[in-house]
Length: 334
Image 1: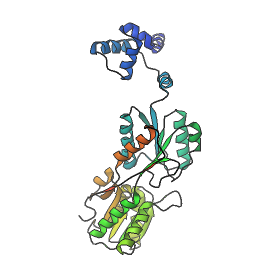
Image 2 (image 1 turned 60 degrees about the vertical axis):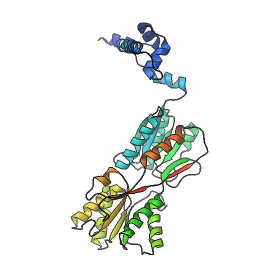
Image 3 (image 1 turned 135 degrees about the horizontal axis):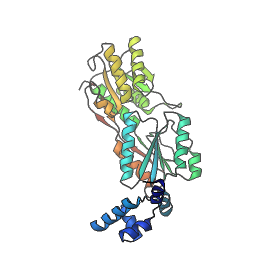
């Protein structure tokens, strides 16, 4: 095919397709956009004409006509963590049911990169953005000026001026600690990931609250990144200092993988020597050995709530809190 022929075909219009197929331009739109059913013969004629002319719909014209790009954006700290990958997938599924596609991007846990990603999504004229921020209350003034709505997703604290959706971290930590205590463990430590601000993570707060309510002395605290390496290094420090407690609450499944590796290398048996309950409910927990007992976040419910808040009917600002649930594996001693 010659360059001029290809260029000519690429400029085919909806009216050209309608004329060749013997239908109205509106029928062409019904078929191309899937907005209304037409007869099978009519649909086939339109598709044949589209193929012959090389017609492609103009998304800019459609967006101008509808007043919407039918696109949303989501920014997560990372796409390598199965938890955030699953959350983004659930958001895509929930948005698709409402006719939206989702552009996914990662900030690599950097506030500066997060700002760049938000600006780039705004430049693509998305209808709204889901932000899993690296800080509790991000600076979103530029998005406000651009008139782009935003929902803070995976936000447990809530921000008064924003729609937000997050799991109840305190309740999740209570579930984990109380389950370990139910097994009879009294020396319960924590491996906790760090935050970018001064706020204490809700999982650590919940751990302390549960131990106090149960009349137990808090076990050792080991801190690290929310990664397998972070969990590995934190557990290694506990092992080197001979401070490994009888049970550990680990603040993410990713860290839990690292804790398991360090324990195995040191010859510690799980759960016989140290019992573990982690947090998130991701595939990491199900495919670790032993399988991790984990506090699972209801990702589909979170995604549905976030999409409804972003593209649903107008409403007052709301912080949607969802409750986690315990998924029993073998790491706790059950």
